[in-house]
Length: 288
Image 1 (cartoon, rainbow, N blue to C red):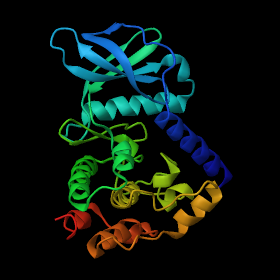
Image 2: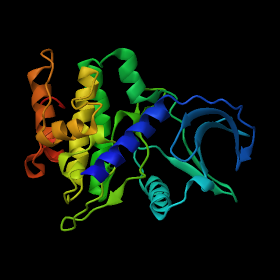
Image 3: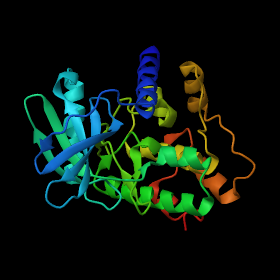
């Protein structure tokens, strides 16, 4: 488990760094394809995310600027290739769209739909917790996109509020398919992916899994975060965090309605075979 803990600590550190990112150096104005790059609006693992403006139409886009020098391992190359492939392949109103991919000697630019509302994570923090009616609306949108992915044999494996963006109409856009993968009914995966705070027990314990069930666990953690304003599993000590996740030790606040409490419990179920499926969740009373 020590390797997994080390991976988790690194991932958690990267997540917190990304959330606290501030640009010290001014951004140089450059043109990528038909887009003029302006201010930095985010920070990814391999480079900045900048606002882009179409030189003719003034359409705003988000441009992920990836420094090739930061991609040094085969795993990093594979992750980037997967992200581009899935974002080009998947076409759904609640999955961010890729307009173009431009490659130069030093950089790869991924030109994507711009979600002006920012991360759902920041929205939750700003509102302390999300009112049930709005949380239901957000959750339905995420369910719709995840259902579409699973119907197309794609799992995300890194679902979390930081990877759910909001557009100007508060419509959810799922981003970052770098840990995404294809799955089959008879095939098993064993890779630890994403943030430990949203990872299913079988994933952090290094057990084999089919695929969709790990996304379902993450959906449960997201729903808990929406309604409660904090995470069900949290600890500065990674071993203690793993213990809480692997035993499913969490507590729902008293103000949670029974249907919401039941749905969270069905999703945050330690035994993968007993965990709620998408079909069950889509027909659950809280969702409808």
